Image (cartoon, rainbow, N blue to C red):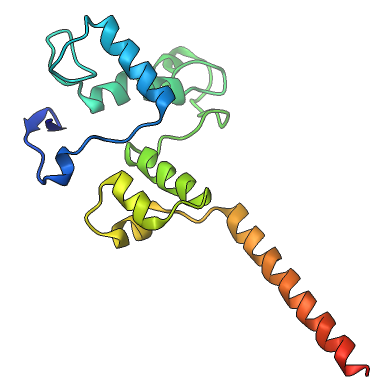
Amino acid sequence: MRSVWESITSEPKTRKSKAPVPVISPLQRLLDQFRLSLGNPATGPIFGTMKRTPLSLNNVLNRQILPVLNVCVCGKAEDENEKEDHKYERSTHRPEWHGWHAFRRGLATNLHDLGVADKTIQAILRHANVAVTQNSYIRTLDSQSIATMRQLESLVDVKLLSADSRSKF
């Protein structure tokens, strides 16, 4: 098990960091197929360069992800738009990039929305403190706020109706 950040490879900081990362079965099958397509190596990064070194996430972002996301309303990539007769205007039909941690925040938020306990989400994300998970990773969705307020409204309506019916007698 290795930790990689900005092309620096090191040992993980803690024993918990060395634990396997839980993944869902469909992802596990895809990763297994990918590993087989590489000749089933027993060591090395899952996603590596031709030299079997870890991919640079910044290179992946700048070469693959952002060119797909940052497309002009005319349909051309941002760097291809210079020759056009209009100023570049990013298409709103593509999602905006929110950083690599957005995947982790999205996972935490979706697990929370499914009713998974915060301590379990903490374990999946491998945070040392549940407060980090709660304060920085789990986001409240608008739909959750609306549903909660409707639930409160129905409880208040029931209480008011029952109090109103008692007062008539």
